[in-house]
Amino acid sequence: MPIPGTPSRAELLEHLVATRIAGDVATPRENNLSHYRRLANGDRHYWLGLELGDRWTDEQDVLAVMAERVGVNDDPEYRYGQDTIDAELTVSGLERMAGRLRKAAEGRQRVLFATGHPGGLLDVHRATAAALRAAGCEIVVIPDGLTTDEGYVMQFADVAVLEHGATLWHTHSGEPMKAVLGALERGGRPLPDLVVADHGWAGAAGQYGVDSVGYADCNDPALFLAESEGTVQVTVPLDDHVTSPRHYDPMTAFLLAEAGIG
Image 1 (cartoon, one colour):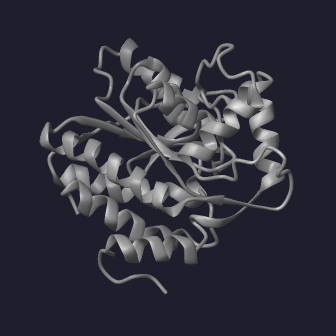
Image 2 (cartoon, one colour; image 1 turned 45 degrees about the horizontal axis):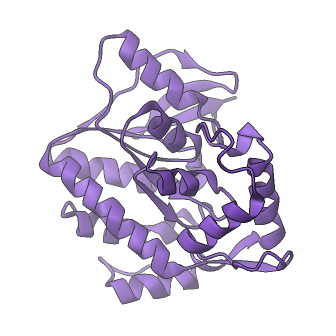
């Protein structure tokens, strides 16, 4: 059952574990390690719009960062079975993100929202955008007519998404964000002061030099590596597609309250 109102920190921790947003998550260990290996081997699909160069070519280095920042099992010999996200790290990430949202609200900054995971996180971003607009921020409207090889770049409920075949599309690509930022510059419009996103949308924004905060699952290591290097300001670890999007509502309420905009 959803938590009514805004949860306390302790209530949120319990809720995250109960809904498997954190704790024993659905993503299996073998999937995590496969993604860490592919990133280390230079597969750009797993770089999420970032340019990692040759800095993360050792799978064990990637695992060490993920153990520290996400809470996955740090034993390289643990190859199969259940893996974890530390709920304390999730809440800590939300608190850091709230600090950046508070700064945006106080400065009435221009903020762009985007998601590559509309099935899970669209309403988290929509609610955050609504709260920042109410606080006086400008929510960036993206230019019309943008496309990538995967589909159309559009905005739905204040959140930039990829649309393909009349469906909101799950994407890891950074190309949609590059298309948006490039079009803003070509049109003589200012870049956002802040991007709130996930997947390649968040990675590409950080790589572009825009302040970027976002969410990432335990099988998407690139944003956590970027946070460790300072390219992305905050990455919140969570399962980004649990059984019901409503499970994220208490987390969103907590985030907005911590930012002073809830």
